[in-house]
Image 1 (cartoon, rainbow, N blue to C red):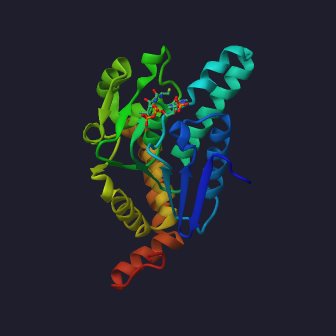
Image 2 (image 1 turned 180 degrees about the vertical axis):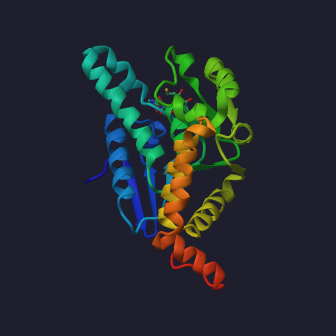
Image 3 (image 1 turned 60 degrees about the vertical axis):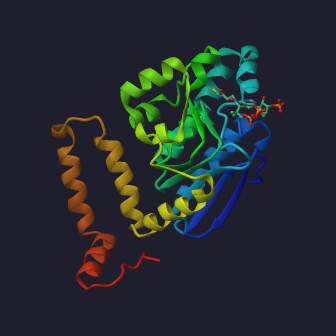
Length: 260
Ligand code: COA
């Protein structure tokens, strides 16, 4: 697929996906939503790709939904309007549900849906000075399709404050509330991201996908309701080829086959 809104760099085992509309601070319109969803979905199916890094070209990670595009929804039919909103929801779910770990590389600004993308990624590393914010209420709308991912990461207390005020906050606060995992000087951002990538490459590829599914399955549930699932997962995975290789490698004091 020819990409107009993204740049993709594939250096297996790492795929780097760049939002590439810097003139509007990587605000996403329908085309960017489609390109990003398709690209991330496709990388999810490629064995050679073990980690995806999502970043934004130019001064900002992403200014969220393209406000011109949102405004234009007034001329859509209800069905068209629902279809576009569904496409955005599908994008966030694709990020969240990818079998590959996705690291967000965040600089400049991550606002509205841009902040939602950060929340849907597995690990976010931010440059100090980045502006975060769920600014939607200041525009008369709500952080709707991103809310499950954001509330999952930051919890209800911080969501009540930040969704209701729409205020902007800094990278250090993003770390405190669990939206980002690290805030580093801008000149150290790439090294910090590479550090996360290196750690992820130590993990077995199928085990990472299973660990993501495990978190999704057990989050917010009663132990009694998920215990059978957790028992089955460990019973299946410790006898799987990957599980056996990892256990043997440890006992034989060697690196497992997937280790770089
Ligand atoms: N949708 C559409 N266009 C946007 C946009 C958005 N979400 N965010 C920024 N732009 C456009 C600006 O209108 C401007 O266009 P222009 O050059 O034609 O005037 C261009 O991007 C650059 O924006 P500017 O504000 O001049 O850049 P900056 O680097 O000083 O600030 C931001 C960047 C992201 C901090 C600032 O643009 C901003 O606060 N944007 C609003 C983000 C927002 O609230 N998003 C929530 C969406 S739900």
